[in-house]
Image 1: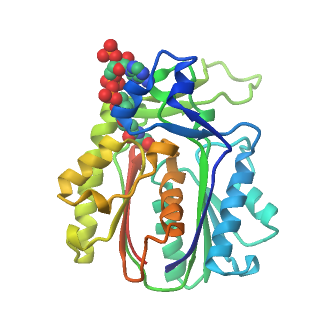
Image 2: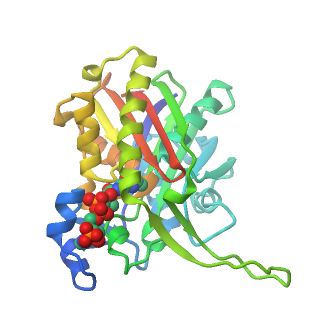
Length: 315
Ligand code: UT7
């Protein structure tokens, strides 16, 4: 498959580190050097589905395709207000299309997992145009009194439209299952038969362990996919890394021995927006005119699961 267009959409409220320090025992001096984050967008009166639809419409327009041409919508999402139907159905209904659609919950690497799935549908000849929408509101998963977690995340949506072609050069998905490192638990409806203890648990993250997982798996995944595709680190035009922490991105870069210019980042203004992070970054770079035909983009993302994924895409 090949990429035809990108889009993104962000909540209007931008919360700075100084804003957080008004109600939390934290400050910019702690947050910025440890994470690279200065501010993040946070949902207020918006609905996540509206951000998803906005990002999707921008991607469809950027791709110069008609909504009626879409053969499939894949939504990557961890939580939204609906349990059912899937966010993809809500997006499809707002777009006025009736192609098959489904959601995946692969946390931060969701965009790459979705690309991998879309690629299989293209290879089987079942689709000609696929819309991927990654929409996330981690601000609704966290405990806003837990400074170790809530300063890291931001909300948003990123989308991409793919068509037939041979520009996705490879994908690699991997898992090191360990639900205890990064999770949120929510309570289901009660029934007359439930006699076990249940509790709402806002997002828990074993930060240092996730940090180590991120750096080691991302560097390993990238080296593996470069070997698969016969590329050297220097032949890659841009590394599109999940924006979880600038120190993670720097450590991956050091490990690969590549110059910083090849690692675009937007974490400073967005924080970690889970699976929306890579497609928002992709859209911002696209709209800034950074890419030229033939450029090689390597995506790498890691997160809850623990899951990680990487992909090589030629522009
Ligand atoms: O997308 C999913 C993937 N997620 C990630 O990749 C995140 C990976 N992890 C990280 O990015 C880092 O581990 C963090 C940024 C989350 C934490 O950085 P750290 O250098 O590992 O700090 P820490 O958790 O070890 O905390 C160090 C100190 C603690 O104080 P004491 O115990 O040393 O007195 C914390 O209580 O910093 C304190 N602290 C804070 N202080 C001010 C933790 N959070 C804050 C805060 N403001 N927001």
